[in-house]
Amino acid sequence: MSLIRRSGAYAAVSRWAAEDAFKAAASEAGVPQHLQHSHTLRHTRATLLLADGAAEEDVKDLLGHSSISTTKRYLGPSKALRLRLNTSAQLGLGDGW
Image (cartoon, rainbow, N blue to C red; front, side, top):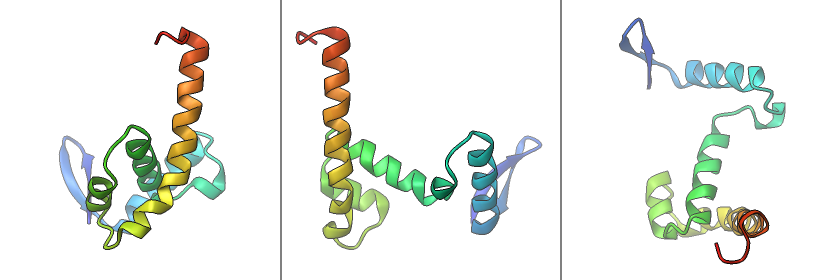
């Protein structure tokens, strides 16, 4: 069960209700349909943590993976993202950043 805030109080909602609310918000925000599922949030969080230098074991524990090999699937995107962010920073702020 997830919790959502209604009228100043929190109420329990089913996983499916939370998924429906996420899809509606993602659609309204213009997120492509193939990314309109809540797993996208987990994937994004893991990728950004790894790109920021978080330890693989910590990300594994945070996501509840039983095997580090599952977590390592996120490493490819995180390395590409880190390279893109570093390149953008260097272009915008110079090499001394």
